[in-house]
Length: 119
Image (tube, rainbow, N blue to C red; front, side, top):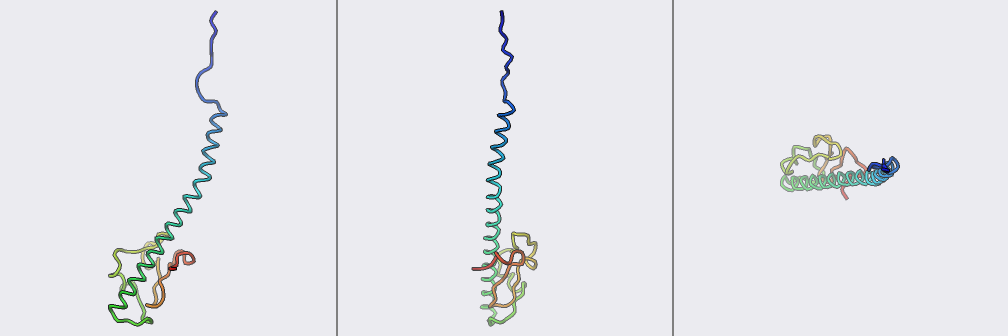
């Protein structure tokens, strides 16, 4: 007499469901951390851009012998910037990313004005 073993190798439905549940749990933990890290890096990049713009304004004012109340426009400081600076949180040009007014006033971000500020 032959005894047949009809069991084939493979995963049961319960095992597959447990693996899917574990992957879902890990994704639920990891995705918010990725979003938070991306937001923090965008904020740091924007603050560094603001610092670079402020330095360009101060250098322009020194070279042109302007007083702190002198008005500043984008075309005045662009020669002092290495490359075009835009806010990484959604800016496309300098004009829609940052606001500059006078030599004494700090530049501000137009996209996320409450958190992207110079310290």
